[in-house]
Length: 271
Image (tube, rainbow, N blue to C red):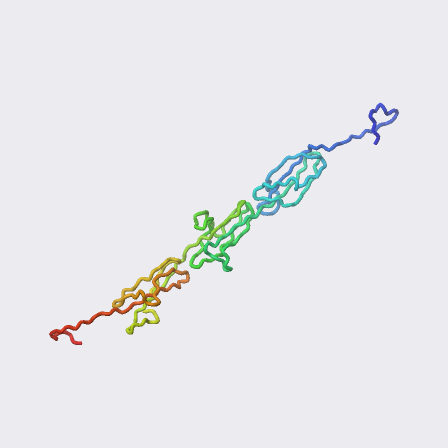
């Protein structure tokens, strides 16, 4: 292209002039940060934020250069989407963010699974309502009552399979247990005439209690017998068990009495 400094330098000739354009460096464009929908399908219904920017017309812009790392509960999905800045200022660059997963840890709090595990975990998406997994812990002698944020049940409670929406931190839940009713047996052995004790109990008493309660054997009142607290095999106390297997044992010795012979007039009963 010839450079003509002045039209007066052109004599007796037609002249064609062309516009020369320089890209603007302040062309407007928009960056939209889109969060994953609650249903997990698409990013069209949750606008996390929107920024107004300026750039050079015709330049390409990329998600990696404008991604935001401070959105609570969301992380850029690593898709480096791009757009070209249009001169009319209508360019929109959308950047997509997935919901983070956070962990709910369930503690047996004295209970175990069939596989002998004392904890289990569940991953939940931030801000999405979901059902907590059902309890799989077993504690012999107890029934599962609820989950709680405190092992002593003093925190926030949740029912089994309750709907829960997790925030941006992991959650710890503890199984809360209700004691079963239980029972125990007290066996009473009254000694034989030869001073030995029978192999099977003379009497058996079944007494109701609760699991893990400490119980004591109550002696029977048997005329002519006294408890022998030091007899071998004596079990005077124990702890109520869920399988009602606790057996306490008491042994009773025959009392001895004296017969006194006195000289009399012979008028009484004869033996």
